[in-house]
Amino acid sequence: MTVKKHFYLTTPIYYVNDVPHIGHAYTTLACDVLARYKRARGFEVSFLTGTDEHGQKVEKAAHAKGETPLELADRVVKRFQSLWEKLNVSHTDFIRTSQERHKLAVQEIFRRIEAKGDIYLGEYEDWYCTPCETYWTETNLLDGNCPDCGRPTEKLKEASYFFRMSKFQNQLLEHIEANPDFIQPKTRRNEILSFVREGLRDLSISRTTFSWGIPVPGNDQHIIYVWFDALTNYISALGFPNEDGDFADFWPCDVHVIGKDILRFHTVYWPTFLLAAGLPLPKSVFAHGWWTVEGQKMSKSLANVVEPNMLVDKYGVDAIRYFLLREVPFGLDGDFSHNALVHRINSDLANDLGNLVSRSTAMLSKYFNGSLPTPGELEEIDCDLRDKFVRQIDVVDAQMEALAFNKALQSIWELVSAANKYIDESAPWTLAKDPAQQQRLGTVLYNLLEGIRLIGLLVTPFMPDTGASIGSILGLGPEDQLLEEHDSWGLLKPGSTVAKAAPLFPRIETE
Ligand code: ME8
Image (cartoon, rainbow, N blue to C red; front, side, top):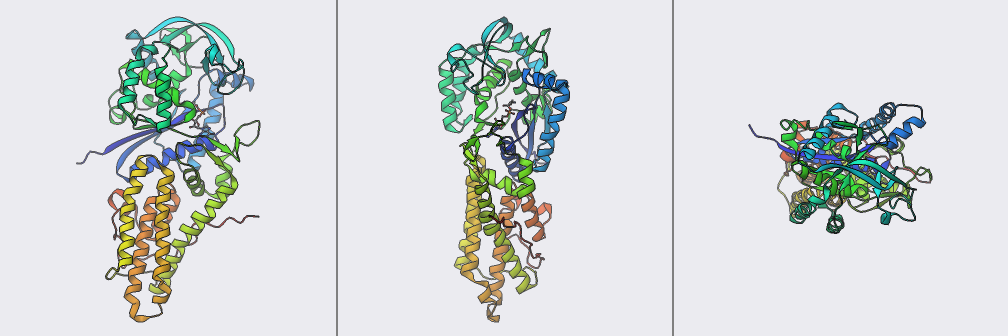
């Protein structure tokens, strides 16, 4: 029996005081693409997403609406769950911080750190930004306001439990230095290295000013700080404090995928909590960039929040998945515009990929009645095509390993172009006119369809429906579509029936 390789990846858990928009969809889709790719490469994947439900913000928002915080969370969580379903997200677990399994884990990790003497009771006085749930020192503030969101802060003084974060500064620094891939991309790593070198303060990790959260074990006057609570989701979902089972299989996590806004929480707070609790650190944290919309920051007040449900209804799920991952290098900021979206759909999807599949299958249907011919001897142009595919599959693999999704798509589209060029250069319609060229025509069409098969496997993690359509056109079963076992050239069976494809992507008419 072979032991399956394990892979664990996570999205941030999203706040329930906001409705999901393309920013949330982006992170979750990037994770889904990686999860699907890893499965196609034979890994057993644990893919976690969920919602962050505790804290003063949710408590206030719920009271304003005359609901309990849990009623509010129950309502909003459905929007996230139904969006992930609509976007074809293949998460294996959905954690809500209001669940009992999570509370057990948070209290246990608190207890462990306290038992080691690294949590102590003290008094806290600083400037608090409620919308960001973050304390700031006087020098951090910009004109008295939160340096992150610009909103007013309030001075708070309260008894608080503190985590001795300062004690772990050197250990964290050594870990970041010894593990170049721990924080990605490199610019983010440098940012955190200089932050840590400036010195870490002890961190206040409890509040007494609200009650919607997880109580400190043994002192329920205190609620555990939302970030201490939220970050622990990554292990509570694996059954921690039970360290057998999923925890043993999947921890440490392969990658926490996050937006750059929450980098410090994931690369300073979370690792030091784990160090203090004596638990292994995640293997890597990847922070992607920020989306603006038509050049502007997305905000409720500008009413420019892009609602993914509407996009999917209008353009289709695969087109949205493709666009978000193709348009912007993963790690950099990007801008969402309808023009760019329509351009990508028409040129990359309808034109390049869609036409390749429809003209190839139409020729096979016309010249061979849809029955795949046996290829004859290969000419140079055929060998070039085959070799390009074989080489490029390794290139794509390295790009996927590096989470360079846009580059991987570019590489796949080089194959689409190569196949389109192969049609133009080998001119099957001319060969078809000459009965003596029948075998040559068969070889060309076989090679084309074989290229399409591989393209189908490669696009599947990005566009699962499109990959499945290509598979079904070629008459492939699910067992033929696992990339790991079917990434070599020449696996299509001569004599099998190939359907004539309906257009995969309709062109979007522009005014
Ligand atoms: O921060 N562009 O939750 P959150 C790109 N609950 N990504 C964006 C984005 C944008 N304009 N807007 C949001 C929280 N995101 C905490 C996390 S984790 C233990 C706790 C994405 O609902 C991006 O991934 O504010 C960002 O990190 C996340 O949504 C923030 O989601």
